[in-house]
Structure formats: C-alpha cells, structure tokens
Amino acid sequence: ETRSCYEAMRWRDGIQAGAFGLQLARDAYRDWCARSDVPMHAGLLKDYCAAAAILLAPVCPHFGHHVWRDVLGETKPMAWPAPGVVDKALQRSYGFLRGTARSLRLDAAKELKALKGKAPAGGYVYVAGTYPPWRKAVLARARACCAANGGQLVEKKALLGALKGDPAFGKEGEFAKQAKLAMQFGSFQYDYAAEVGLGAFDDVLPFSQVDVLNESKLYFSKCIFSGSVLDITIVDLDATDSPPGPEKKYAQASPGKVTMHLFAAAA
Image (cartoon, rainbow, N blue to C red; front, top):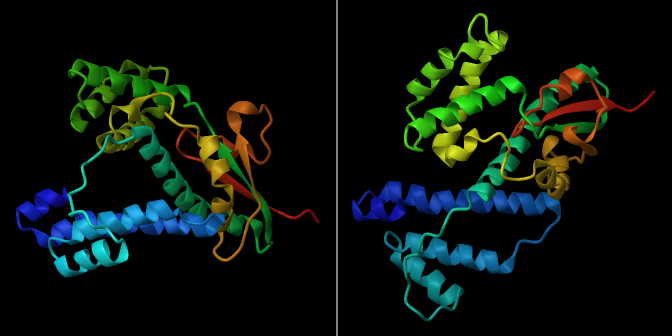
C-alpha cells in the first residue's frame, strides 16, 4: 500500500500507511513489554529501524540515509522490503489481545460502580471456547453462502438476507427469540471476515484464547487500572463445571469476547 501511494505521488497517504502504521505497531509492542516487565528484543528493534528508514526514504532521503548508514551501520544499498505471507491465526490472536485489553478497561469501569466504593481485591476473566447454538447457526449459514459463491465472501446484503430468510430464525423457528441478535452478530462477523478472511465464520478460533491471556496475564493486570496491578484469574469455561462469580457475567462470554467480574475483599 505504501509503495503504491508513493508511485502515485500520494506522499501523505504513503507516510500514513507505512511509517505511521509501523509506528503504531511499535508503540503497542513497547507498551506490552513495559507492562509485562519484558525487555524489547534488540533484533526486532533493528528490523523496525531498517524498515522505517526504507519507508521514509522516498520523502525523507537524508534522514533515511542517516539511519541506514550511521545508526544501523549498513553498507549494502537500500531495498524495498518484500511482503511476506500473513499469518492469519497470529493476526487474529493479536487482534484478540488488543481488543481484550480495551474491553477489560471498559468492563472495569462498570464493575467499580457495582462495588459501591469498595476497592477491588481481584477479578475473574471468563473465556469461552464454543459458541451457543444460535450463533453456530449464523456461522453455518454464512459458510454456506460463501461456499455457494465459489468460496468467496458474499455481499453483506446477501448474507443478512439469507439469515432473515432462514427458517431457524423465523417466528416458529428454533432460534426465533435470537432473530434480532442473529442479524447483529452476522453483520459483525461479516465485517470481521472482510478484515481477516473467511476464517471469521469458523466455529472454533484458530488460536488458544487461554494461552494468549495467560502469556499476557501481567500485561492485562496492569491494563485494567492505570498505575496499579489487579490480581486476575483466567477462568476457562470449557474446563470447569462450576465457574466462580455470577452466572450473568460468565454466561455472556463467547469465543473472541471475554467478560470480567470484579470482587471486593471479604469483610
């Protein structure tokens, strides 16, 4: 995208797509390392500087040359980086990590009100690995529509029309009560599929949510409340018959969307 912008002399768009986009990824990585008490990887930082220098070279040639030669000590000529194969599963797991950090911060604000001024002693983060039956029916319909379209993503209007005409969501259907929710979920998953591919319609995520959360547990503990560490427990709903905390909280968890419950210290 950056190269095509430069070739069309859309310099501002090229900088936005390349250098600024790369900078946002660097900032997210730096934030994760700082909160997780993990040093940043020296080799990765060098790769970042090299890529940034190349992406900026067409509009800032002297700066790019300075970073390339004087900072990195490179002697070979600059070469435009060749795009590699995108790891869709890794991309989705990263999106899950970033989205979960944000959702936990928002949930914490609501949970604090429920504590009525009491300081939280800890929290449960609920993870679900399977969808409820009505959501599985939506995903199955979406997969069928794409299969009938030659394995390509259909238009959103066509998908929503198929859901609306699905007998399972009709007045006498098995999921009649979830008909409105099905349209909302179908629309959301369609937008997600447009971003990450048809894998968004799979019943099972291509990565372990529990592993991602446990690997970044300290990061999440520091993300929920700025400047403090909250003791959180990751609850795998597929691995326990009696989850701790209120049912109305863990019942709302679904693949890719965790929920949280904060509790105060026992009196």
